[in-house]
Each structure stands twice: as C-alpha cells, then as structure tokens.
Image (cartoon, rainbow, N blue to C red; front, side):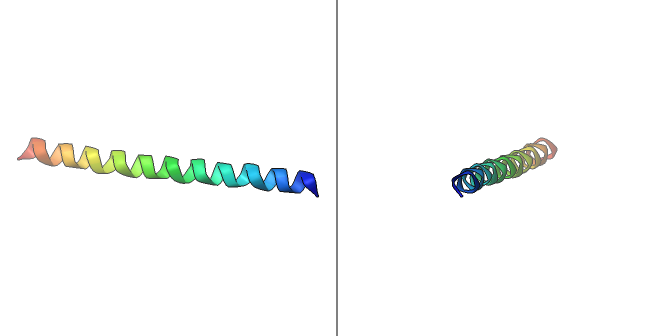
Length: 41
C-alpha cells in the first residue's frame, strides 16, 4: 500500500510539472505572436 501512495505522489508531481510546462509553452507562444505583430506594425 505504501508503494502505491509513493507512486501516486510522483504522478501528482509529474502532472504539476506537465501543466507548468504547457503553461510556459503557451506564454512563450503568446509572446512570440505579440513580437511578430509589433514588428509588422
């Protein structure tokens, strides 16, 4: 039972890292699009 809880904790941490990673990619994409728009104008 203890091992299962440890695995679950690791999965939870991986999920957090995954969402942070996705968030960072979204922010970078928005910033890049913003830069492109500024260059065009």
